[in-house]
Length: 531
Image (cartoon, rainbow, N blue to C red; front, side, top):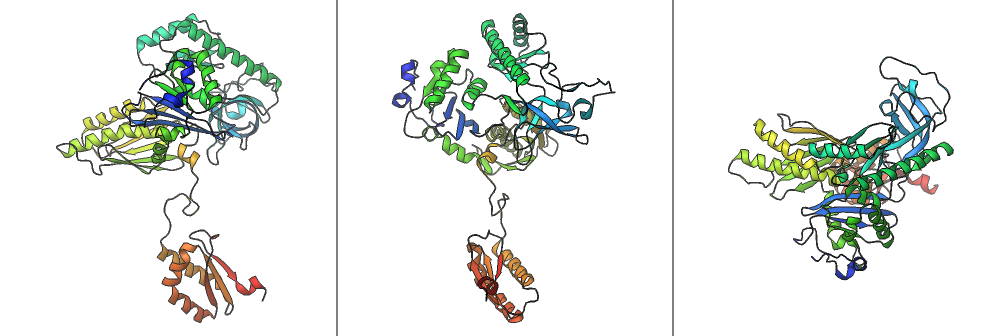
């Protein structure tokens, strides 16, 4: 595929940029696609040789997003939870645990107004009541967005990400991202950071994107972050809580800032405004990537043209077929994700041991990809096929740990147990992609199953008898879902006739679309018509 370099050519992608599928051999090593034409929702997809790798979806009304900074007010102190609930202007108050409060009283003295308090020196860490009081102003940042009935989680340890650095105004600490494992590189970066002479009362971390960057680039990023923090502090002094002091950049800029590296060969955007926004950001902070930015103008939607829409549809299947014929099954609950690995049609290898080891290693890589793609978080239990040898379990662990290194979310992985189960946790900062796009089925309430017609028919008969109570006359209309009415009338005709004779009540089955599957409604006809 011919790569375009000139700016005037980049503005006419529809005239020359081929629309290849994700599996096409001509696909570059990695491509970022941005679908921003619909103002209500923005979508960013990262695709590579193996297909869709990561997917990010954001609604326009997501005002309380991860990373936003607020000046809030403590609404309630809960000593039993060792936490405070903070009003940041949202539907639900934010949850602030004692471990996320800067001692002794929340930090940012000179910025926030608070009543004078005599500093205590209790043994051990202070309690939430020692640190905060009801009505106190606090400076907080969202670490996890609102999930279902839970409000957002907050911290007073604010961090502001730049392209190459992360500023931590409340912690005087300098360091390098843990994902940079080369010790020599780490030492070089620390030396460069010291040469920048950052403010002594602030902390800075060099991100992975900072590797190989010169002093001038890091200095520019540092100056931008310090100016941003100064602006936040000035607003915090003037504005009354609850108020947003800083909102994370829109998904377009944030995706480029956080995800674009040397592996990304193309950034393709289908909206002119977002294209200009991205071009401005790249010009200012990442000029070496401007020749990789393209504007998509074709009539075919960008995700359809590149095969992403079809890949998204497959993303939420309960089972995922592996290339060799094996299978993983994913079940998501409120606080736990269970993943089961099956051999299915897999037959590679000359022995049972080789077969099991091969499918477990392939499944380990695919599980790591699915966790990223579906943005699954919380506690994750992976049930690999049982392996008797410790050496085989270690090989699967190594394959998984290597694959999970690409994950930007914080993870903690335990060794595989003798039962073949691996336990891990993955940082959860927002709703999973599935819960963002789908709502529970009203028929099965999200369980994926519903009662069989014969069992449902028996339950309706029992409810009908109970509803009649002591009545010995009248006409009763039994309203059920249309899918239930005809099978029930045929299968339970004799039982209904016997009930009519026994009670002296006329029973009529009625198909009512407004009645949910599995439910039943009753109406006495004389009450309905007034006779």
